[in-house]
Length: 456
Image 1 (cartoon, rainbow, N blue to C red):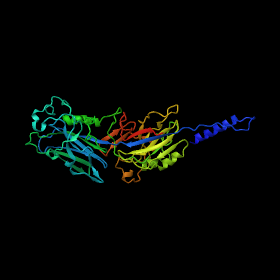
Image 2: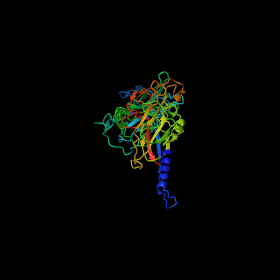
Image 3: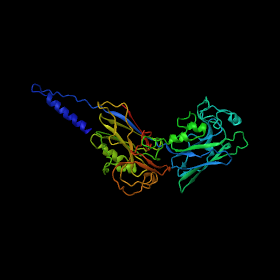
Image 4: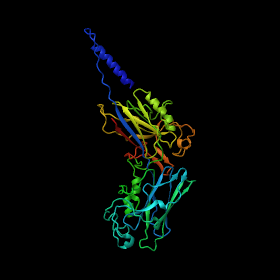
């Protein structure tokens, strides 16, 4: 801004001196057009949604008392969904209500009989035969069909509750071991031996998640995620593979690495191809506020620092964003300026999410506003100020007391290329570039979805 004002003043001085003559005392001044600003809105959505997925069982449950059992880790703020096929049907399945089961009430884990959260659903993908009373004569139920996915389509394509009593088929129980931090889900087959259709229970799928409808949505057609193979043919392979699909670098396309809140953040526009806030590979400066943002989630010092710089404008946000929520900023920019942002990954000691150092290009070379923006360059950075503790479990992290811990032995800002998932026991997740954008073709940590739009 200072540079623009100074340039205008110089131009006006030149115009005045060149237009004055000895023949006239009148001052002729050229009007300098004001540089047009454009307002942009940047939205950073917390997209930590699918946190873990597991197969349930290896073979169908065919006798009374037989059970599937699977253990999994899940931190606070998460939900459980699972589904198994009603084996001797066309496309019925046993599953949780589509929003899932809340696993924590404050500090208390969900335990006990959870059968009342489970229903018998019709997937709406295949026409129902009379399998409950005349199963041997069905042609397209999973045990009788000549090949998978061969039955005629259902006229009602929506997933719907059949209204049948789940306890006639199965019971479900959830337990929790505080010492290991593992939940265990147990699905037990009910006594149907005397009935025409014994209602076998196939292997299934389990997902730990934050947002509703991870497997299917009641009242809507099935998603294109492989669940149809489970509902019609009793195999969880297709949907398990969908959740675990990898990008071009071998990093996950959908599974998030962690559960975390995003801190209040700062967004800023600047000139040139180098962010004025941080430099990858170099230590942070003591006065720029990145330490306070990356360690404590406080953007106020960074906001003041950036606004004091020449040709930089910054705005800040005061509200954190849990999964499904967003940080939103509106900011004005001049042609040639780039956009960037920073928000703390709260379940860490000193990590933050930002675009790369060059920032997001907002304008074309001729100064016109771009019609679309390249937002696939958002990465997870380690600020290099504090030693790293396990994600979500360190006492030096804001949600766990924010105690003082040792300084980092490497004090440079660098991208986080590996995360050991302790929260959900997925093991080591690698992203060579530290990608955070959800569904980035390279794969990554699937933490945020960044969008930019023109306001005026």
